[in-house]
Length: 449
Image (cartoon, rainbow, N blue to C red; front, side, top):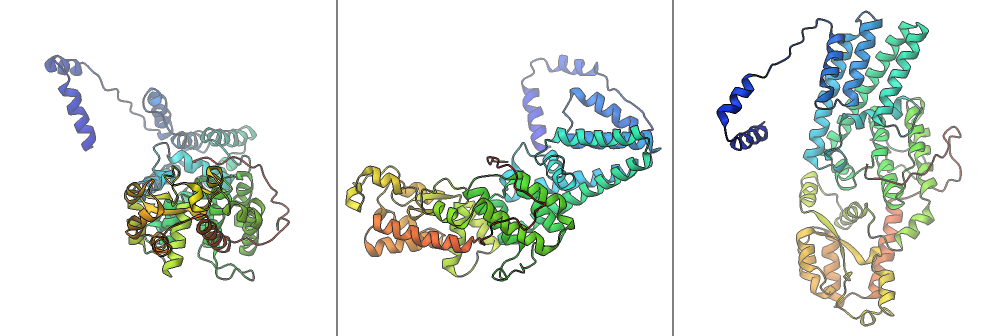
C-alpha cells in the first residue's frame, strides 16, 4: 500500500492541470451489481473482470464449481466451496510469503502463483496427464462436471466437487507444512533454499508429508540410518541436478497411487528410481570429470564442510552462509596467469581437460571470491582462510603447507571428493522396478521450474 501511495503521488505530480483532472474524475461512474445468488455474482464478476486483471485458473475453477453447485445442486455446496477456496488462497499467501522470506527460488519467482500448486496437485489426483498446464486442469474439471451433468447423475457432481476441493485444500496445507519446516530445520532449509528442490518433486515431498513418512526411517538392510527425506534429497542431487534430467512420468505415476502403497514399497520404488536414472557407475563417472555448472555443487560443498566440522550447521548459521551468496570458486583460475607446464600439466589443452573437475573447485562467499579472482593458488590463501566454509579454510591451509597447488594435488583432491560424494549420495544395485505397474516414463530435459 505504501508503494501504491508513492506511485499515485508520482503520477499526480506529472499532471499539469490538476483541477481539470479532478473534474474529469467526478464524471466517472461506479457500476454496482446487486445479486443475491452467489453463483450468479461470481459469473458476473468473472465476465466484468475479463478486461481487467486476468483471473487465475484457480479463481476460474472456484467460479466453475460454484456454478455447478448453484445450477444443479440447488446451491448445496456454495458455502463449502467458498470456505475451502478462501482457506486455499490464504494458505497460498502463506506459502508465497515463506518462499520470499526464505529465498526459495521456485516460489519467490514472480511467475509462481496458485496455479502452479494446482498443477502439482493434479498429478496426485488424476493420472490423465503427468505434466498438465493450469488450463488443462481447468478443462479437466469442466469435462468431469459436464459428463456427470449429461448423465443426469447429480449425486456424482456433488461427490466429485467434495472430493476435489478437499484434496486440493489438503495438498496446499501439506505444502505449507513441509516448507514451514525450512524455517527451523537446517536440512529442509538446505533442500528448498540451497539445493532448490525441483518442481517435479514437490508433489512427492508434499505427499510424503501428508503420509507422515518424511521422518520415518528406511527399513531395508543397510539403509537404517536414512529416512524418506534423505531419499528425496538423494534423488534431487543425483538425478535432477547431476544427471540434469526430469522423469516426470515416473514420479507422477508414483504420487497418484502413493496413498495405496505401503512404506516399504514406496522406499523400494524410490531406491529403484534413483538407480534407474543415475546408477552408481554413472554417478562416479560424473563426479570424476568436469562438473562445474552442476546446480547441486553449493549444497554438496556445504554438506562436505559439515563433514569436516563433524557437525551440521544450525539454522542461524545456514541463513548467514546463504546471505553471503556462496559462489563456486576455481582454485586454478579459468583465465590462468600461470604456465600450465609449471604445475604439471602437459600444455594448456591438458589444463582445460581438468579445470572444471571437482578437485579444482570449492565454495567461497561472493565478496571473497571477487577478491581472489584470477590470482595464483598461493595468493588465494588469505581469502580462503577468511571463509566460513571449513572445506575452503582447510584447502587454504593445505596450499600454504605444500606451497602451491598443481595437477597432482587436483587429481588427488578429485578422488577424495568423488569418493565422499559417491558414499554420501549412495545407490543400491537394482536391475528391475520393484513395482511392475509403475513403468519407466519419458525422460524430459530439466527446466528451472
